[in-house]
Image (cartoon, rainbow, N blue to C red):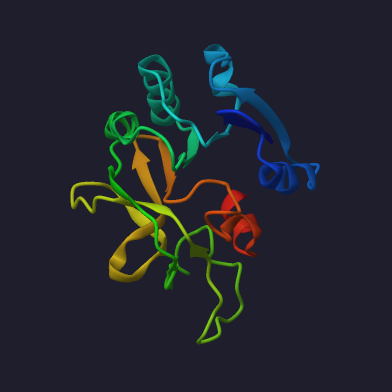
Length: 195
């Protein structure tokens, strides 16, 4: 299965490790300024990796891609312009960023009924080890979205959520793919999330 990673600067070693380890996947990397819009439909999954901004043209193309059945995973830059991220996410019908939080916070809830995790675990220990974020984006909690939480912080704040847009899906992360801001990329649940 072809996967496209759209990177701000460098490729993610964590995406490389996940997708290059399994011959079922073919990971293609491109920079945010060098995207071939006409080939987006060839990828069942597109991962946005640490983009500082999303141009209006790319935003429109990605909205169309998702509406037509594509799956988009958004791992935002934590140094980005939140106004640009807000504009992009509004087009996709997701929650939008409120602020960047710089305090260590642990994920406290995993939605085992979500298809991503449904058959992954045989049993869950009472004190399950879940990811920790040292810095993350706190999103609004709009009631008019199609949000399904996969992972949550305390207070039902989103760590990773899915939103539906017509035939497609958007997965929105509160953290980037950076081991310095969260242990998510090194955590055992990272692999099933990315598959």
